[in-house]
Length: 75
Image (cartoon, rainbow, N blue to C red; front, top):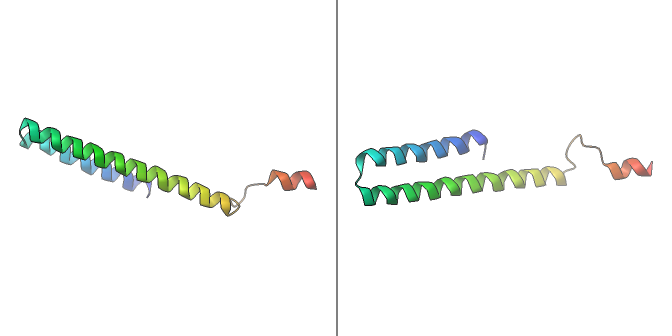
């Protein structure tokens, strides 16, 4: 998940929460806000997990142009 997609999703949740503020009664408004906050948190956690998996995959592949310091010492 790209950073732009994550922020787009969170902005969508914020717009729904904002529309709930203007259209719903007190109890239902709080329920919508809790659900939107939960979805935003879930989106953020999924983005962090995907970023960590991508970093781990890059590390397993050798990282491209990174220098392996252990090989440098053996020379």
